[in-house]
Image 1 (cartoon, rainbow, N blue to C red):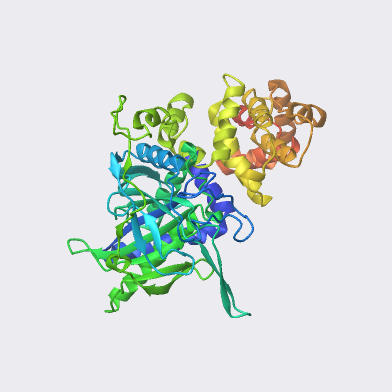
Image 2: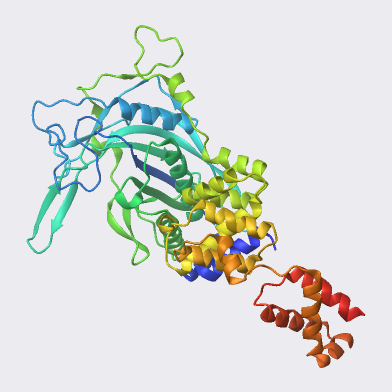
Length: 529
């Protein structure tokens, strides 16, 4: 059985909620196709820059600070205060743009985007709408959801622009006191906004894009991508149309807070719009929110038009100039593109290709390893600790057995305390033939139960070593055959299905420690005599 098939079976056996979701996804997507509608999805993603201070002030950016504890005078729009651009944020934006193959603008400008909300004291947000830091990039990613897709496929989404901007504060509504309060800790938090072209067709592609972008940003160290902390927020622009016809009216689903939420929100919105148009109704251009509990989008407000924001140049910030070549001139910027280019690490897709070539593992396995930082760290450590260790056994132990047992214990990968050396020892025992897969599972269970003994010690003390001696296997087979003369007659009469009964009895007799491949071979030989 291939690792791909085993992985799909693992997902279906152990994640019933995902099974239901995937069945519904496939049904909805099939309905969309059957009715000849085509989904069109474009994402706008806000990524919080990893920086100790805000974009235009020296206030801290730590998550979970007491209310209004990280607010500088500028963040509170005290008259007379001026913005000072954070160089670290510019470097982060450029590094991200380089990783996404964007065209970086030598000179970019900041704009004021006006709107009057209580959580933005100045009455405007400083952003880069008209002349952003970078344009025309692209993100290539793999779309693969076990149980939904038979195999991975590659998708590319173009990046319209990447810009720097400040975040707004947060309004706190007290229903009992019937009043609203404002927390300005997030006001001025540095953000990168990445605007993608509408190149996607469904929710799974949207989720895969977000996941790949998160992998890249974490690899660069430019964003933590902790969606539960608001470090990565996704807006999805969704519409449908028939092939050959103009694009349909779009809706925008705001502030989706998880990768699966992106898939579910887009899928629901595509289905909702299809039902409306099939019923002869119209899709309204509006902003909607994703209700994760009700698993549906709900109306927020009519869609604002760009002119409502009254963009104007930011008068208190000069043009942002970057050094584009190795030899700066007298009027070039302090941030050097060539120097940042040298800092680019191995990106996720490069890692996948390297794993496939270096360790001869499947594309599906490489995708899952790279998508989970903890799994990748485990695998890398296991293979570095000992040369010649079987990479496929290591992958199977991680992707099949470890994930399955963690799921049973309702533990996350981050909560797993088993060391890579312990996992490597289990692989070595299986690779040498000392134990079989069933015993490897038992050893993994012991390791997750905080057993302090090494796998080799447990095998020795509990007598879990695999029975591989040919003479002993023959003796065991003889004992089982002697007890089942009727089954032997049935087998020789042509009822070959009873062969499984012999194998099952031997597995039970040896507590599943016998080398079953050798058992099968020996049984066939003896039954043919």
